[in-house]
Image (cartoon, rainbow, N blue to C red; front, side):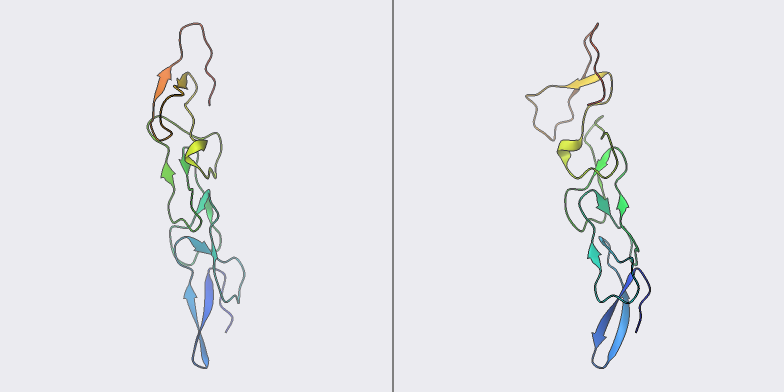
Length: 120
């Protein structure tokens, strides 16, 4: 049986049944026997996805097969969509990050007077 995109074929005895792709997976082609896990930086939050979505700016997904994206801590954001690591989270423009902080700490300090602090 030819399953539509977002679905895959599962054998059950002599019959084939179409099942939706699970969250964290997608399938863009019809008639496939398996779904494909979303890459890092992308996610699929519902079943039967034809493609994985990119994480929005300010979010990241650091695992393969993710069904959600994780928000950057505190005021931090990302420079682009589809970020795949906490390390992609940066301080917004007008602030800077103290280097001695742990990666998951959201410490962005205001830019000192007379200095420029671009995004990142």
